[in-house]
Amino acid sequence: MLEIIGASGKIFDVEEFLKKISIISKKYNLTIQVFDASMIFGKIHLNSAVEHALRAMKRKTNSTNTLDKEILLYASGERQIKKAIPKMGVKKGCEKIALVLINDDERGKENLFDIVIKNILDQLNLKRDDSVLKGNHQTLLDFGLNDNEISTVTKDKYEFLILEKVAMVDVIK
Image 1: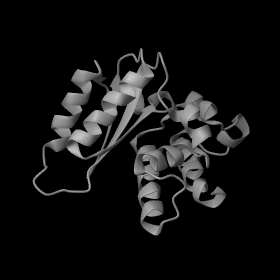
Image 2: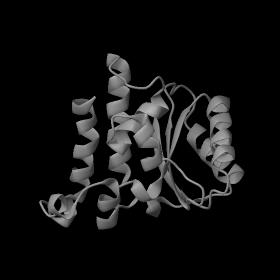
Image 3: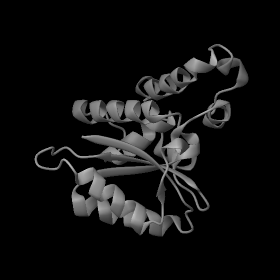
Image 4: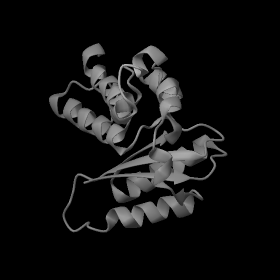
């Protein structure tokens, strides 16, 4: 099971924020990855990163030792985690957050994500806001694409430029 959500709020202490995410992740036996949502171009961007990361873990072609880090790697379009974290990770002052929650065990856990999401939002003083996941021209520039690359597609196809970067991680690994 997979859930992707956006949230708004403000991160004052990144270490404390990530510590709370880790505690919740362990408590509910989930994989949870968080991102600076200003670098996300829609749910399809994160869904693709998750699919690539799961495939890499299954085939044992992963570059990192955990699924959450592998998702971060693919979402960033980078092949090195030391580049992926500063590019996509949450930072002090970050106000737009994207979260990916993954549960391998689907038995009897229909409402688990609702419980976990409420827990995350409450503990981290966040408000559910999926609108922060919408990308635009600036998102593409921030992601590392240039205007020449962006001009090769119409605005309604911008997400494909990001999906191409996600898929390229397999090639550059």
